[in-house]
Length: 128
Image (cartoon, rainbow, N blue to C red; front, side):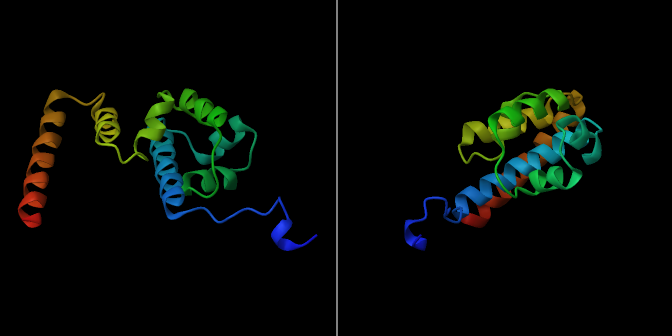
């Protein structure tokens, strides 16, 4: 069969798709670490090899919705929390920040918010 007519050929993912995969992978890695699970433990529960978990966390390849839900249950978080960090929408990014703050003491949240406030002010001054 002629290469141009081969329906099984896949196009290379766009830069946006690669960025999204990497961001979701980073969220998966963070959630796994927060749940105090090793890549090996996650691999065993999923019935895959540790290298496959490593690839997921590095954003190599895509993840199915079903596997995302299973991971969220395993990590004790919501599946949308694993996705929010990949979005460029401010409301989704706010949700990602909220999930990072969840479970921290009031003092720790105040500390983080104060630092974010100073960082935003610095970036705005730099942009002027």
